[in-house]
Length: 264
Image (spheres, rainbow, N blue to C red):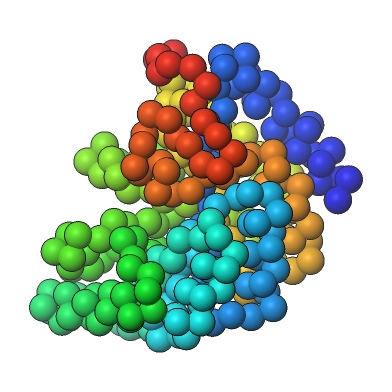
């Protein structure tokens, strides 16, 4: 793990020092996708979250064992369950980007699907307020159905759209996906992290959250080792602390905004 720490210091250290010089700390939150039931990989993920006091939003597919997942998350603490699609099945026509909702779907049917998913989470004792669309496919019909249910949305992107101030996306995927899932590589991942932090600093967007994205079922050992080095540096806070209190940005590790807001 020493190499990961060395690269974090070399690549990310100077940018983090610029933030510290302005009495600021980046606001980082953590989302993990594709959970369906407790597994050894999930146990390892939750242990990592607990070890570094890093709250996590776990996006779970409603057709899984949500009851068992909810019990595991309650035992671990610091975990929010989000809805990750309906069955995580690609229903896109040939040649179109993968997604569960397509142009042939009626709004009433998608609203009903969402209601069924919400009931699954409620019955497990963990009401969900966040929806994470598989493959980051945010079809207009899905967006309309989410609004009718009062659900928040999380995808994958860069800076937030000003028209969606409550939307928190992920930005930093630790995995590469083609030809198969594997660790993205420390240098590549940290370079993107530095670029996004630099963009926020230069625009004075000190409180603009940065989302870490993981997929525990697909991690190789290199991914796990990197997370052990990365998490204690960025100190993720819970999504709910960001949405609920955009000034204080508090998590289990205390305030993330170290000085009053100011531009520049």
